[in-house]
Image 1 (tube, rainbow, N blue to C red):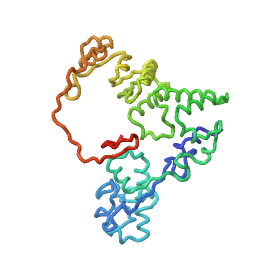
Image 2 (image 1 turned 90 degrees about the vertical axis):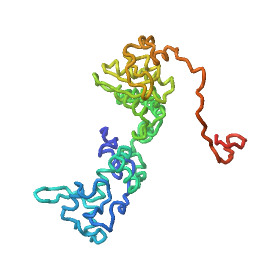
Image 3 (image 1 turned 60 degrees about the horizontal axis):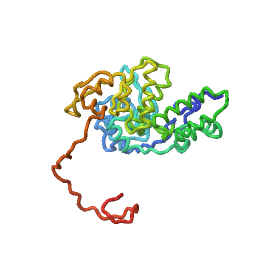
Image 4 (image 1 turned 30 degrees about the horizontal axis):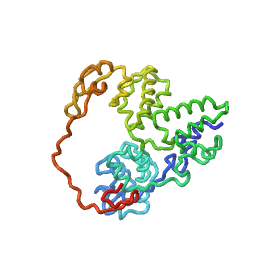
Length: 354
């Protein structure tokens, strides 16, 4: 039986050798890395972090492999190779041994190994300008090597399973009845069912974490920790029910209570009455929103909050009423010039696209 690492793109045994488990390849436009008309001492390297007097710049200018006073357009073929593609090399500078590496491999290792969403603003702008990303032609974006992609369970490969909607994958896992893997299948099935319960059944396991919304990411973490054996942990959730259907809020509350019952402290910033109602202790901040808030108006149990007379308490007890009169408008915003259009949804010609 193959080890679990043979089916993980985070390990060398399972990752695609072409893209190193990233699922995409990148091609760097080297002309975006430098200005041919300048020397190194004049700031020829235009990559963020390589400005004159920076640490990386000092390694390039003192390595002895390049002439820092010569303009790049006058470099020899050997110097161009040293500047752009030199592999990791130890160079002696004074009494120190430094590591020299060409621009292209250094950029790939230091910048492109990170997800774009996690890059600093300046680096992200540089990457958008100088790097072209494409789906890896070898693994077609699955990030696994050929051996891992060929293994099948109940007629499906791991890449097919990862691309399935989680609710469908949970049903598929329940059909695995081999006694040798039953404990593993039961654990996986429980995790998948928990994801469905918190309203994430529409996701797939091959979805990149950076594409998840804040609420989705919080719920994924919650399910992961619910299956952990850790206790005595403090969890902080910021509006975990945002975007959830009322039916899914009840499921979310069950998970929050499950984390608490495992011996953990669970702090939740929330506005939904259904979630406030399950709290052991409530801290109400107000009395209003924005600049009129920031004061602790109540601290205690939910029953006390309902009787407290605060805006939140009155809302929970359904005593807050709508305004009897609507606000008087201060002005209007005219919209001029939209061309009449037929949207195709209805037979009418109107100024608005349905």
